[in-house]
Length: 214
Image 1 (cartoon, one colour):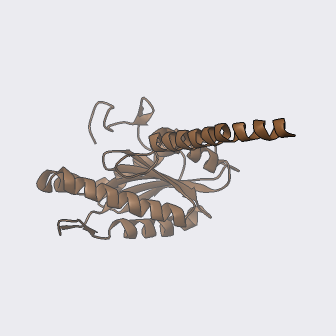
Image 2 (cartoon, rainbow, N blue to C red; image 1 turned 135 degrees about the vertical axis):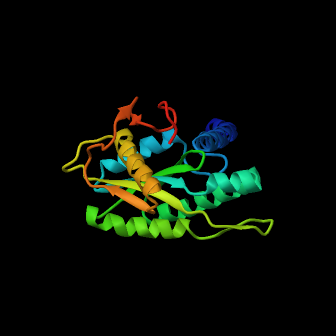
């Protein structure tokens, strides 16, 4: 009996050490899967969660691009731009929490999200609510106030009737975001899963990185 107790007492610090090591490892992994400025997921982490979400029922994929962000960055500096991005990340995080969604910062002032949606008919209501939350003024620590709107593109997806992966749906939502931005509308949503514009290397023709900026 005494030998058993001795062995257990020797093993407890080792087990505690491994538990602490595992906790720290999980925290490092989670940190690596987050954008350091906004705290939102990185692309790979988002792609995994979005793919799972799409198999679970009717969903919508969104691409969000801020309006007037470059103007703020150029006029007031990167600190102001970073404040706007952090505020946007916080608002998108709250929206995702309220809608059981997942959000990613794609890069620069561009974001994406996936969340459940009851039907295609409900999507405009969700888009209007999302737009309203992003249009709220951003107040910075140095007493500046910025109003930054957003152009949003969205596409609804039903796994019971549709066939598309996360990449294809982001491509369609990006196309609608571009239409909204060009037309001065706050948002546009795709009515079908057929792209309206050409594709270059899996991306919308004319998009940054495909040969012509947009």
